[in-house]
Length: 579
DNA sequence: GCCGTTTTCGGCCCGACTGTTTTCAGTCG
Image (cartoon, rainbow, N blue to C red; front, side, top):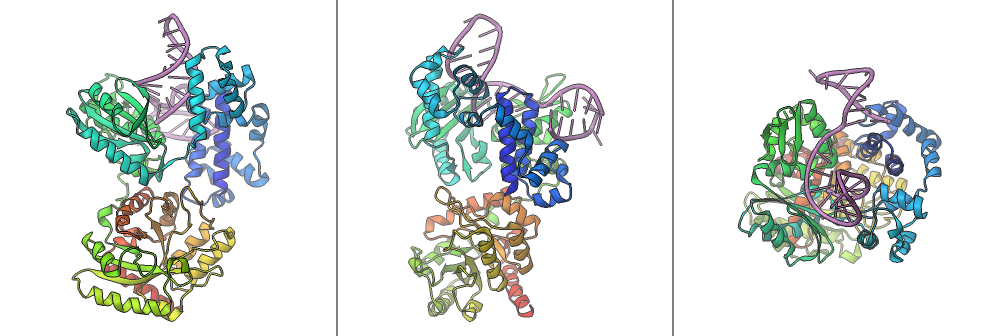
């Protein structure tokens, strides 16, 4: 977690330098460094020890020294020095929409405002208008900005944003003269949460689209509206940005608005070196101004001399180099998922009866599934004891006979108890085709205890998959901390897969840990943890996390054909017998 | 502060909208 702490400090330094009106490129260097640390896919400790920090993109000698200093002394002197000159609280003020470094500096220097509370008080008293270039309108906007900030600048989960975006796009599509439409931004990149919804439309009649957009029934308020760009807030307080462009540069605009910002900056720097200029209107030759691409996104990447990059990995974390060298991974898709290995029936806390949920899964076109109800210690969920498990196995085998070319694995989501043992008898667990291990109680144990618990469970050799490895629930609990190096090491050794739980509030593992897991040689399973039939649809969110973690279909055990999966599960058990 | 198939120095992505201006700075993405 140290890399997160240091990234935070670098970001703070960048904010403070911005307030001080320092060299913008120096500021960017700190932000780039912070970003690299946040998304680091290998162990920072090792790099520090081996003096290899400068191998990280965006970390040069200076930032490397500062990281090392933090490791040795627990602080960075340079940072300590600047926060003495500029109050750290000013950083928070910059989080208010509409307020940037210049305004913060002016507010502090002219009116000695250094907190949001003071700013609100002064704005409401109309005292900001004494400042140059600041009149009533801006003052009102600051008050609104503070309200917005207080309400929570919290991010919207992808599972709420995507359906809303799809609903809005369906409405806009009906307008005559709309030739093309797509979401963009972090939503198109399928980040686990998004700050707003970006929608891009290709049309020759932008004014018509703009008007229709403002009149949508979901719209509560229009924040800004120009001829080609508008922002609204929906009734459930989600900001939606719309941009209307001409069809002949829809591809370039889509590329541009999909981001990420860092991806675009890198892409443009690269194109500059080729004598090309990229903007949302197309790709142009620098010298002649001649347009050489723009209508189709694939072509934008092509004329820049690289493969098209899937939106999910456009984070400037190695994808541009890979695309230039033809080394992009062949990312997994929803259609590659051959079966769901985490499903509940009404034998525990699922809604549907066994035959019913099995039939629903079969109709989705899966080749196999696993029924994994809760185990006995989870009384609240009606967990199964040993005799119930044996009874369920018989029942499932009987149902399975009804199907051709469709297999049902008998499984369990066994509780990993606070001492690390599983809550069902070993002999019964061995009878099952697949065992998921999961933590549902004792979530507040410290990092070492939790890690030891999971390691202990894996070392029984009985656990095929660790379900929702960190237990987080977005918006309600952050999940327990884990020593990832240790978990990856043991998971690799015992060939235990880690789950990407596809529920949009879980998405556990996260994209960054997925990528690390792959690099450490750990297998992944993408499941929905379905308790109700609609939840099968959440598989797309889990697959998106996998894509963001650079996984291909070989990395995911439930993207394997049935015979390969069964062979794998059996080989795990055979290996156990030898151990 | 970082970085190099133009460079170890001199560059570093680019445009729309707002509010205040009367030509533009600040903010945002």
